[in-house]
Image (cartoon, rainbow, N blue to C red; front, side):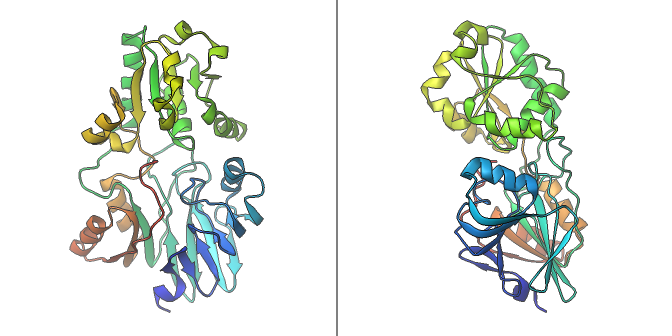
Amino acid sequence: MRPDELLRPRPEGLYCPPGDFFIDPVRPVARALVTHGHSDHARAGHGAVLATAHTLAIMALRHGPDFCASRQAARFGESIDLGGVRVTFHPAGHVLGSAQIAVERNGLRIVASGDYKCRPDPTAEAFAPVACDVFITEATFGLPVFRHPDPAAEIGALIRSAEEFPDRTHLVGVYALGKAQRVARLLRDNGWNRPVHIHGALKEICSYYQASGIDLGDLRPATIEGGGRGDFAGAIVLGPPSSFASPWVRRFADPLIAFASGWMQIRARMRQRGVELPLVISDHCDWDELTRTLRDTGASQIWVTHGREEAVVRWCELNGISARPLHLVGYEDEAE
């Protein structure tokens, strides 16, 4: 069986003809397998959705309880038969509930990674490479220039800045799913014992993480009702990037703008967002982690989805691994 007989790109997304399902489709389909809850991978309107229980719950929080006609929760390591195709979900380490999806038939195994992160993170199930014939990888940070520093050191810089400038409010840009919870936990694990204030847009998913047993410490609303303007001096406040262009920012004392993202290695992106304190904290692999993972899977073929496709394909060619870009559209690498 050829790999493209088992999985192939279509305008809707990756399609499995024998199983008649899509992986992370970008438009409504009859049957969707979803790797994780970020909105560019987990869209509403499908007929049936198969995903981990956490991903299904996050989709319901973000899209409403009727985001699909029917749903089924997949447990990590459990194999499910779909039309003679065996599918198995494995942890991807990206956000809570994120999964790599192994698709197998007639001795051929293809693993679709979705988005993944190799570094330890107590807010997500740990990634482990899955042996396969074909590995489908993202390439968000698929250039040698991207080498992420230790996230504990980045959080340490934030804590030191908050201590050095006690009259200023440190506003940290974080995305609502994954990054907000990871930064909150990193603050706790690196000695920040004071409350962490959060924008209202972060509350629902942070509450879900905490209800799922992930300790984020004392989270409080970043509202005037929760404290006056002066009360936020010296505080660390987490908010979605969109809120930093709104009147919400003006309620804080002499705000110092920080941003937690792998893209903070790029000075132009820092200037574009008016960032004073860049925090290079990513929920994706950097170049070294990505290329190591490609070797660790043992795959003889690599298919590359969104991101820096051509650079990863070239690395594979130089290292004797067959590779091709899939040129899938509809997946964002900005909201990482």
